[in-house]
Length: 221
Image (tube, rainbow, N blue to C red):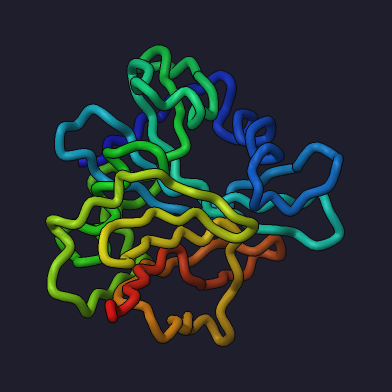
């Protein structure tokens, strides 16, 4: 069960992301520091109960045109070996003590939960309330099973997304720059075998829906 503690964080998650986001290749802001607002997201359970897993949605409102980002994060009680490049920063948690926050695309615990979410073997959890499913997160899958598919290889970033490749041309594509779907109805690309879609809050208070994660399956010759 994803346990949400009502306590303090120093620095806050948004403060960590303010420093980290401009270093990402998919960051759309200019030279000025981003001005971030929490816009949504959800959590996933770690079966071992050791790692906090959150897929956070934040909006940078510093520019003329706000940009919304998907930021998967993991929170650990000790450094993750070999993941120094993925460290977002450290925080002091009022209950749990020091926490190491990582870009979740490089954390095997989060990456292993994404196929389970797409297949419906696990359920998204509310971002702010313990033991509460998030019914706004919708998933689909049309393949033969992902339980044995390993997406924990080298994650790569481009100007739009992070790609998690597996064998036989199968790729998990996490949309880092989020775009509201027309009429709030996400449209999948033709090669999609599965997806995760969700909602977030726009700066004017309206709700938007769009694709968070798409499973691409490229047919073999």
